Image (cartoon, rainbow, N blue to C red; front, side, top):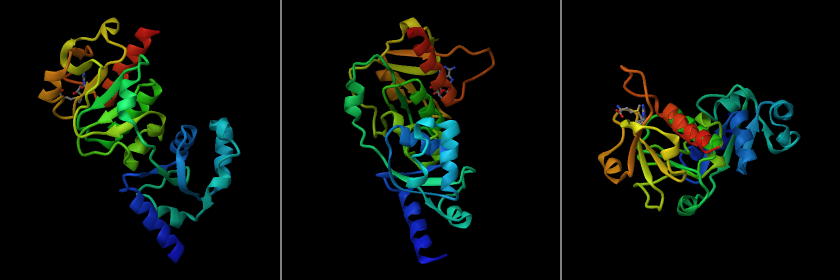
Length: 250
Ligand SMILES: C[S@@+](CC[C@H](N)C(=O)[O-])C[C@H]1O[C@@H](n2cnc3c(N)ncnc32)[C@H](O)[C@@H]1O
């Protein structure tokens, strides 16, 4: 490996742990990142020209804008930059946007915010962010040690961290929004009884919500399930709750 390739590999490795940066892997994640205003620090691809062809088919709004921003690298170099090479052969370092969570939670627009308590699985975190972006949620907040901007979560969200305020917090933030504990033991979900600006709190994959959230919650709401099924997957629960609210509101 030459000196320039080595230095690039160090930059990509360092960016994975840098709280101001993230790594965006694959065409779809890059497409969403750019569409929602991401600032790229550097981007590389095996065949930059193919990105404009893909954009022509899949993202006409970005057609003609990609190849010029992406440096060509060979396959071996690309494999040294990320743990799993995306089949679309493009990876980038992007700057994380500054998130003003207080302002996002104070926003009077009738859209819920999502709180994930100590989510464990990066794929789940990404899937929750992706569906929260699709439902136009006000924000997605996580507690616990896992970073919702980690490149594995960015991959799982197809880059949609850039589409809404996404932030990790140490504790459940204060706001004027009602807090709903979304929990299998709650009262059956009825869209007309869900406040449009609620914070919807979801528990960790293994143990569910903490006693702190149950104590602070204004209501405890469940998604009905067939007898014998204990719970749904975290991201599935987030999707159902957000879209039941969305469809109920329209
Ligand atoms: C995999 S579940 C956690 C399972 C955990 N053993 C429990 O009993 O809560 C992760 C989170 O998804 C949400 N969830 C899963 N199934 C649900 C349901 N049927 N109704 C409401 N929330 C649900 C809850 O927020 C839960 O904390």
